[in-house]
Image (tube, rainbow, N blue to C red):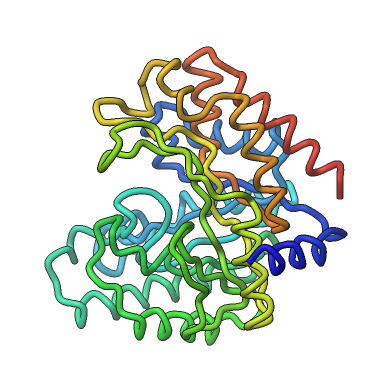
Length: 323
C-alpha cells in the first residue's frame, strides 16, 4: 500500500493543485448567513476558482412537473462571471443531511413511481446547465453506497449504473464523478466505471458509539494516496477529494450553528484547519474540495471569529499562486 501511495504521489508531483469548496445555500441559511453574501465572499474574498454546487430535487421540484432553477441559476451566473469551475452534484443523494433530498409529495411512493420522476428532474438539470461555460463536471449520487448514514430509500447498484449511463447519454462532454466514502476498505472495481472517483476525508469526529469523545482517525495521508493510486493502476481513473472535512463535528447537545467557540475548536480550530489543507496536499490528489466554507463565513461575520476564514484564505491563496 505504501509503495503504491508513494508512486501515486510522485507521479502527480508536477500537476497543478485545484482547491475548491462545497457550497449549499440551505446550509448557509441554517447557519444564519445570507446565501448570496456567503457565496460572493467565498468567490471574491477567498478567491476560490472551483466550487461544488448541489441540485436538490426537493428544492427544484416542489410540485409535480413544476421546476424552479432560480437559486441554482444565480450560483451559476456568479461562477460564470468570475471564471469559476463548477462540479454539479446531481441525483437523489447529494451533500448534507438527510443526504437523499426527495420531495414530500413522493415520500411514500414506491421506487417504480419516484425513480422515473427522479430521471425527469435530472434530465432537466443536465440540459439546463450542460452548455454553461462554468460547468466542469457532474458528481453523481454522493457516497451512494454509504448505507449507515442518511435517510435514503434505495441503494441498488443497478440504479446507479442506469443513472450514470443516463447522464452520459444527455451530456457526453463533461466528466461524471462517482464517490466512495472515506475509510471503508476496498477499491471500487464494479460498474459503473466513472470518468473519475471521489473520496471524502474526515479526520476528527465525535465518537458517539464507543469512546464518547473526540476521535482522530489515525490514517496517514498516504493511506488515501494508496486508494487513488490503486484506482489509477487498476482502472486508469484518477481520484479527487470531493469532501475534505474543514468544519467541526459536534458532540450530542451541541449544534455547529451556536455551540461555544471553545467547544467547536476542540474539533476544528485555525491550527487544525491549516493542517487539514496540508494533509489534503500530502495525499497527492490534485483536486480538493473543502467542506465547511459556509461555517468559516458564519464564524467571521456572526460569531466574531475570523481566524478560520483567514487561515482558509491564506491556504487558498497559496494553492492559487502555485499554479
